[in-house]
Length: 571
Image (tube, rainbow, N blue to C red; front, side, top):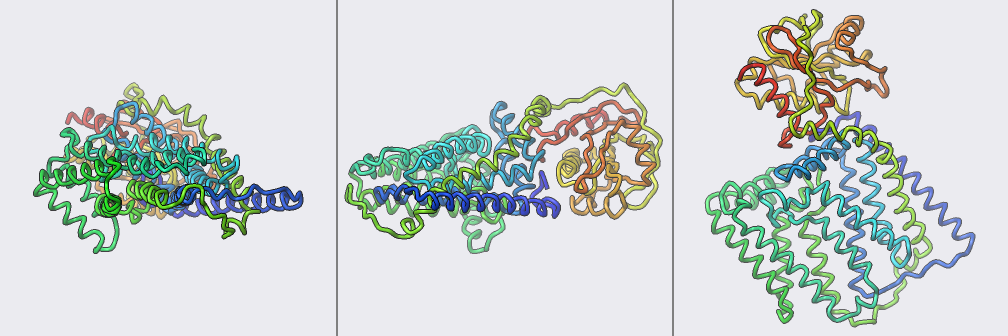
């Protein structure tokens, strides 16, 4: 579900059929294009063998894009991407960048299925088009598109690789793996003759050396906080908590404990290793053995610092930085060993499938179009909400209610007890309307309320969080109890989810001017509202569009809830 680490069966049930339909359409288009080209007997552009190093980089880069697309197809992606990937990227970054990521979070939460499917198609399509389109206009177009997409992902998905937030370190992936996707595409766009130059391998190694030197500098900067036990150990602790076999997590845990007890020594060693390796790769006369040492180091960092890209998290989006640096190192190695201009023109699989290459390349580009269309259709809505998001990020929009009184309505809570909306007159009441079978925004609001309750601490005893069922069809006690159980709200003593006969619910909705449209795929369309009521049953303010991400975003809607409750409770 949006804002959660796990996804509901409703979302998952829509995700894969939606993706499958798009893939069937694309496969049919590729086959049709192949048939048309065969009937015309048009000459296919022959596979350009090119230098072996270039072929290696092309195949690896395209394969990584396809892998990223497959990672985006994980079951947790529609619901967990906003919270587990985008929200952490917004922590500690400048306000303008946090607003960009916040806008993207809102957009994702408003269209989780469309954007999840779109991301799969875009990234897998780029990979297919890059590999199959080599030597054609489609392939070059795919490379340019991959650079643009990589830049967008770097800014909006990785928060500029974490460079603008405290604690940036190459050990965790800074300055961002996706920057090397763009660099690889740029190299492939170079004229073929440059790949035959003797200096190509040396240039690639020096590029990796510069990245390692930059990593040493980041690791050494005092304001990054990596010279302290808490700052240095935090990154390893987060890696160790990812579900994985114990033999993989045990060394990470041990390194976290060592970093906690001896931060200066461990950090100095990390700085020294990266600086020495970086200088060795920059020095053109360094023995080739240094390349082997650098590759071993990258493997260790990929394991102990980047946890292999965290595949066990369920929301891993790429293999992280080290494999991309290793890709460039191996490309340099192959470039050194290959004789310039002597690439063998072997038939191989690429030759036998030459007739399919161009249809596949255009099919990959078609996947981008199929993925982008639903996203672009939803863009005007997201743009229209941009002002709301900016207001949320600085505390809120709160509309004064003029001290209106709560209606005296009796409903049934999730425990089967009859309650009246006015019976909590001695408390602050935060009231909202939730659809118990919603898999879009309602779970986000519920999670935010639970997080705000935790943030309030002892003051939470003076607050009652109340939700009223907002679905005229799915409104039974079993429905609201199922929602509470799935959202893990059953342990909250000050949480009430109310329902009742349809006439009573309709009367309640009318009292709050709530416009509810009939269910569409079980879910209803209703405004996203939060009412704040001071002790004495007086509504004092209302917040709209409460769809900001969960608690790990610093400027989240949870802060608004907490601040407003403290003000009303006098705490």
